[in-house]
Length: 333
Image (tube, rainbow, N blue to C red):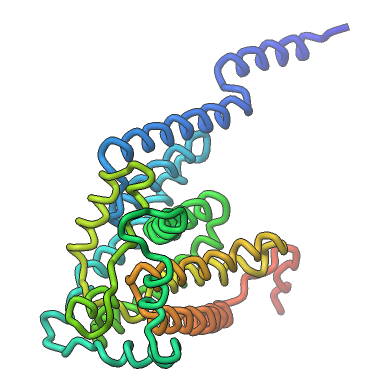
């Protein structure tokens, strides 16, 4: 037998159910909007071209993260702005100062990398060997397509990973971004103090054998000629003597090293394959010497160790939080 209190509670429940969406509605709305967002992105990329600029990639990533905030506390959107604006401003400053070597008058290095690669290649530069074996100017092979896809993943992978980490685990997002920014800063300092030419540019100077810049030719087989044009235009506007170290190679290893411990055996196989494939793509396409790749890998090791050490120091210096389970000591008389 129902009581007046139970009837009132039931009526209140009905009213609340009508006014507030069921718990499962907002996640479904969020998923539908994310799918629509992805569809719009694909249409835009196909029509206008894939955005290889850092600002465009970050804007598209943050747009997806804003949709992911639907149904969550409003402060999540504010946290998104707080976390990503400093990140973006730092990268814009990096792009602005990357060509500083041109204004400082520091001589551009060329022979050091050639000598190092000749030693590694037993007398011949690995890029020259690979292009003589594999490159066919009259035909785009399947591995040319794979090289292009691996090469351009550099422009997306780090930011997509950062976006996923931000949505799922803010603490890991912070750890990943700190390592990424430290690696970027170390690379930038090297570009300024040690400007160096890539293999394709050294070939144009007559310092090495015939080397073609073929990192974007895979777009031809895919029919994405606009993407190839956008990539070529972007490559023509950046600092051409920022080859040492290879941040393409370094970021691929950073992804591998950051997720290595938590990955299963098959995940580790995929993680390991990424930097290996990136190294092959960079050397074969004429974008970097083998020594550029090796130095980029060494930089990742230094950053992983150095940032982890700084994080431990910072944690040790933070005052301990009081344990709420332990009451304060009674005042003495």
